[in-house]
Structure formats: structure tokens, C-alpha cells
Amino acid sequence: MSRRPLGLIEGALRLWARGRWRAETGSVSPIFALMLVPLLGGLGMAVETGNWYLAQRGMQNAADSAAIAAATNGTTGSPCATVGDYCYEAKAAASRMGYANGTNTTVTATYLTTGCPGTVTDCYRVAITKNVPLGLLKAVGYQGTTGVSVGGGAAQRIQVVSIARATGVGTQFCDIALGTGSPFTINGGPKVNFNGCSLFSNGDLTCNGTGSDTGVIYGYAAGTSTCGQHQLSGQSSMTDPFSYLSSKIPAYTSPCNKTPKNPTVVTSMPSSGLLQVCGDMQLGGPLPITAANSEIIIYNGGLLLNGQTLSTSGSGSVTIIFSGNNKGTTAEYPTGSGTIDIAAPNSGTFSGVAIMQDSGLSDSGGLLDMTYKGSNPTIKIQGLIYMPNGNFEVAGAIDMHTGGLSCVGVIALTLKVDGNGSFFDGDTLGPAAQCPQAGLILPTVPGSGARLGLIQ
Image 1 (spheres, rainbow, N blue to C red):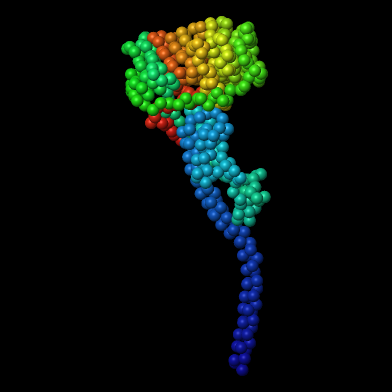
Image 2: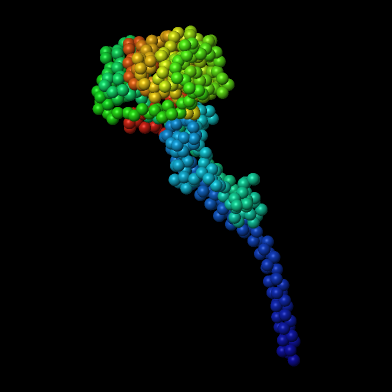
């Protein structure tokens, strides 16, 4: 009898334990389901944000490379409109690192003259943006960046920015003579001063007299050089670096086969910013230009200043172009008393070019040859004077454009600088110091490449 009550008790305990076990195991599923959400959220945050971080690091490396590529290229205009400009270089560098501009990835490159970090006055900014689809984080209700989707689903936008600048674009050739023989001569005198320039001649480069090469750093010559701190003779000749521009000159609206007997008197610029004149153009009063990237094109004629001033101000810029079919009978360059005080465009087709003669014009009786004495006219300029088939003699001071940048370059068939000839005499920066900001990229001395730096 003593064992029976004990068996009843054991059976009761077994039934109670079995029921209790079933009750507890039945509660595991809802508890686990409740815990699954934060588990997935934590896992998603760890995995996805880690992937975002890795992607951002790779994007930053690509942006840094792209910004340096843009600064190395050094151009300032026509962003992604011209093959080989800084924007193309930046996008190519980013693409090589796996970030090609396209679907879900955007690469933008910008040249800035304002908005650079600190006191920097010019820089290249590259931004890379990538849209990444969401994965596990959607389980905790995260919807990614507002308004961003990939394949119709929520996505996170990741962006990086890099800014670089070229603290120099190499030592530039301020003045280039394209002719052969003895196309570049400098005669000594108290005011000859090239102040940090380097010179290039496709023939001999000759400096006569004490002080004739004051300020010249490199004197390069395909023939014999006697100019500069570093005189380098027997160098490879240079092909005209701006010859392509002539094909960009707009054609005259109607045939211009000869110079009219009477000049066209001009008192204002068209609102379009494009002025085309057949034959001589004469100023009928001051001609202020306030529109950027303006063009004055004179076909088969010259610019008669008539004692007046042609000037740019504010954001205004202009290129004065002499073109045609060689049927003019007057000098095809600015003449007469008066003043040209202009800045060339810093972007666009004629970026950096202030005064140019069409390379298709041939010299006929000296109509392309200009002797500049510092007056008749007075020239204050920011940009390039381009006379590929003209002879240019400088016997006076070419000064800086009023309120402008330190930038002047000359490319001519032959160049002669006499005792009173100078470029920006007294300017502490040097005639080509700010040409990149002014939109003018001159050929550089071989091996004097740009000094580059990331600044953000």
C-alpha cells in the first residue's frame, strides 16, 4: 500500500511537467518574432552602414584623383564641352577608379574663382554622388534619402567632395615667335622688363645690350638663344598652339569682298554680344562692353579708335578678331589715338584671347604688322595678343587691364622689343602669373609642371 500513493504522485508530477513544457515552448515563437526585428535592424545597420563607409572611402579616393586631374589639366572654360578640358580629365580619372558618370552615379567638376576654402582664389571642385539601394534596413522602417530610389525601391545617397588647386601651371611662355630665321629680338634699354616671363622662338632668340632680358627666366630657341637666366638653344620647334581658333570664327552674314570706302561708325554693342563689320570699323564714341564673352569681328578692315576708348567692365569681356579674305586695303589691327582697355573672356570658344588675327590671313604689304609705341593706341589688356602671320614690334609699355588680372601673352610671326618696350612694368606678380584664372593657358616650359595640392 505504501507504493501506490507514491506512484500517483509521480504520475501527477509528470503530467504537470509535460503541460508546463508545452505551455512554455508555445510561447517561444512570438517572443522570437519580437526579438527578430531589432536583431535584423542591428545586423542591417552593421552590414549596410559598413558598406556605405567602404563605398564612401572609395568614392573619396576617386574624387581626390579627379580633382588633381582637373587641376593638372589647368583649363578653366568649356566644362565638358570640349574634349580634353578639365571636366573630361576629372570624369576620366573617376571612371578609371570605378565611378563612371551615369545611372545612379554622378560626377561633376567645376572651376571656381569664388567659394574656395580659406583665402584661395581659384580651385577645382569634384563631387561624386552614388545612390545605393537599401537592404536589411528596410525591415526597421528606414526609407533612405528622401526622393531617392534605385529600381523603384528606397535608396541611400552617398556624396563626397574634393577640392584641389594648381599653385602654378608650370612656367609659361609669355611670348612666342612662330617664324624662323631670327624672329625674336630684344634690344636693351632702361625699361625692358619681362618680370618672370619665359620666351620661345622657332628661330634665334637674341638679346642685345645690358638689361635686354631683365626678368626673363627661360629663353628657349629652336636656333640660338642669348636671353634669360637659362638660355637653351637647339630646342624642338613649336607648332602654333592656337591655330585651331580660326576655324571657330563666325562667317560674315553676307559676302564681304572688299573694304567699303567709308568706315562703319559704331557707338554701341548689339545686345547679342556679337558685332560683325565689313571693312573698317570706327568708334563714334566710347564703347563700353558689359556682357561676358562678347565678340567684335572685323572682316577685311581695321579698328579705327578715333580718339575714343573701347573697354570692358564688371563681368564684361571681349575678343577683337580681324578676319576676312585678304581683300582689305587697310591695316588689320587697332590704329589711331585712343585706348583699348579690355579683358578677354575667361571661358568659351575664345577663352583668354583678347586681340587676334585670323591665321588664314596672309601678310600683304604690312597690313598685318603692328608697331606699338605705348600710345596711338594705348593698350591695357588681360589676355592674349595673337598675330600668327603678323610682325609685332613693341616700343612702349603694355599695361594691365584696369582692375584686371596679371595676364598678357603675345604670339606673333616675329617679335621685336625695343628699349622702351615692357609688359606690366612694376607689376609684382608677373605678366603671366594669373593667366589660368583669366582663362588663358599658354604653353609651358618642358619639365616645369604644375605644383598641385588637395585643399579639401
